[in-house]
Image (cartoon, rainbow, N blue to C red; front, side):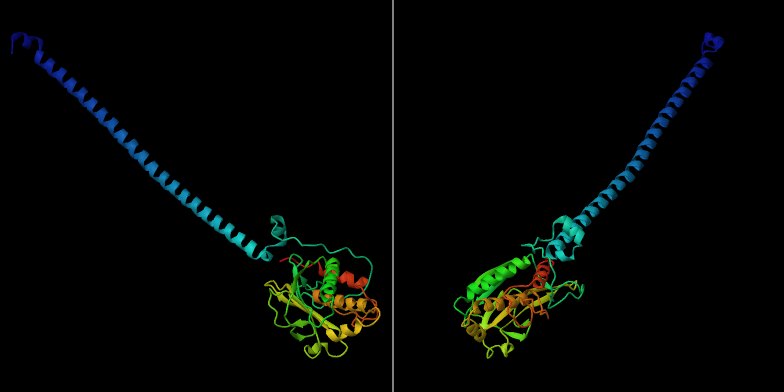
Length: 308
């Protein structure tokens, strides 16, 4: 060490300077480490924030997916029920959605008074008659065997008259070789739901229900849905061949024969007998050849059944 260094305390000064630099360097290193630690902390915190966010978004996506699946399933199920079984849909909803079919015709407005009865009434609503579905055609086949020469034309004319009085739509499907089968005076036997109405002529030897002074019998078979509402689906009219032979040999017999066909078609669509002799649906014809006021009131009501 030189004399000058000893006098000026150079080594001590250099040590102090070096120590200051080392302390400054330590502080800089500490600050840098602090900044790195802070950055690491921020990164870790951001990572912790992102993980719950991703999980939350995943939960939301799963909920949305489940909601969509449930909604589509409900809509498809409701649509299937609506179109396969529209009667299960409440009336206000069905009407708003247009699920109810519209009647093919319209029953006329009938004024006046008179007597009428119905062969069957609804168990769920005793005021309402059992009737044909006004939104479906009533198909009819005729077996003219043993009948008069104009049997087909006579029946078709009567079908038109009853159709106008009810609004129901009758469709003539042609002639057939089918023969009538009955299990009672108003219960056609052996008819399937899709079978057309059968109008035929027979003798009392073939159809025992025609024995005595019976010129014809008519009636329909009904089915009941799961709500307990009944409707007619098919039926029969059988006219006594001997009675028609006898009538057509008499003066005015053609009108009386036509009245018998109308009477039995009245039974077919659901009218019963009345005690009032001024109505065509009286059990015995007393000279009337067309429907009376009470008959027409009942026929109009039978044309306002429920659509299925």
